[in-house]
Image 1: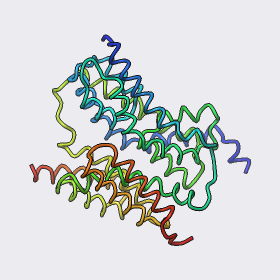
Image 2: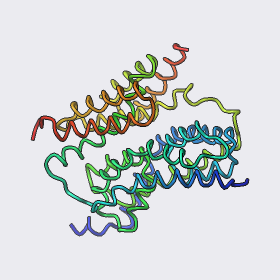
Image 3: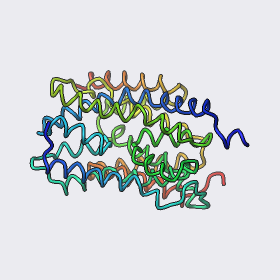
Length: 100
Length: 236
């Protein structure tokens, strides 16, 4: 249960980098209202970030992931979140088993 | 207005409970990955204490995975710190966006809230803040079980070591994909939705093909934001 100084330093460096990224918003006042192009860009942020996270997995990993992604996409159009998650897990496990 | 300005103990509890409930599926998905990170960490030569400490202090799954992948002893702190910086850069954008929702938080609570802002917590907080004011109680509910589960899962993985199966084989990583795709679609009525989606996912895939790693997230996110800001406004 020891803590190595080099490892501790590395963990603290990772923490500092992560916290610095997460606190960037503090440079702005809370509850700020945006207008014009800035507002349009900011409002698009959730979709832009989430799409950039999932797209490489869904479109550039393998056909099992792409097919499972298509199933999730269809499900997300109509069904509640729990159903979408179950369909995603089953589709990913199934298509990967077929691809293996 | 007085009812909303002075929340009762009852409404605080309801808000907290809503926050906890929102994260339950995400916790079920995150724990197997925390276990995997713990197992990976001891495999790379970290002690059980160090593995748990990393999850408690860094609390950023993707960057922990990438860092452990390239971990050598003695740990190259500068390289690992820069890796975390690149992988977590998207959190800078996310915190800028989330600040709009933190108007009801006491000043001291804002950095605390942002410390815990992993992808899932941010996404749930943003989704909540669209329909109604985001309260500190709801946000506390988001963190209350998610964070301890992440640390406990890592410790469990470090103790169990490498006797564990890969969660990807069971499709468990698709829980995150499903949650994120679902959240993306909740925004589909917004003007410029399709343009943002195409610009972001197209750019992310292209960058990923040329240069695999964390840059695809930043590049895709920026492309989506720029497309929304400078593209044609569908219904302005």
